[in-house]
Image 1 (tube, rainbow, N blue to C red):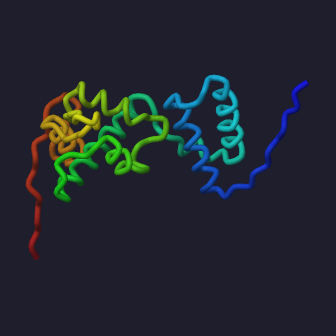
Image 2 (image 1 turned 45 degrees about the horizontal axis):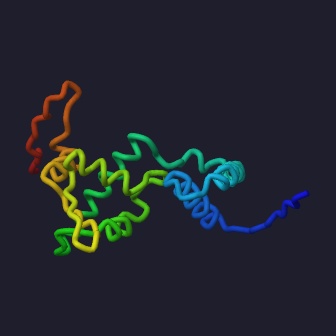
Image 3 (image 1 turned 120 degrees about the horizontal axis):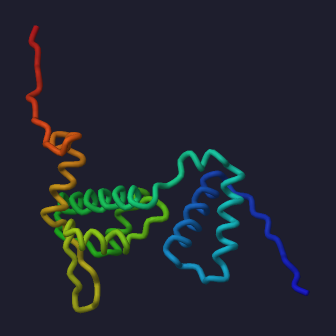
Length: 169
């Protein structure tokens, strides 16, 4: 007969959110052994029931999660270039993303897909470190999605950039 012990833990809301996020990330990244995955999902469900409004602000996943993460990667790379760094390692990039990467989206998956789509370029050094830089298509994507002027209209045509109207008294 096995005895199941329970552990009682009092957490602040921020600590509970951090735990919820960490467990979700570990499940999504496949970091947990198979025998622990059901218990981890149970913990997530119990935390979700305690604070049900978390579900209203749940992390994006799937294609939307990839798009949010890809834009965050491009912004982080361009910010590094602004500070004089042409490339970042995959580890530095993961740290630079911080909370901008949605929970449940793994950085390795995002970087591999971005390389396939030629949004970034990655080069491995002799010590197997991956160095990443923004490719031309990545720069164009970021300017189109965030600039506002390059937005694509409903019919796929580029909207014409209108000059700002200034009225003088």
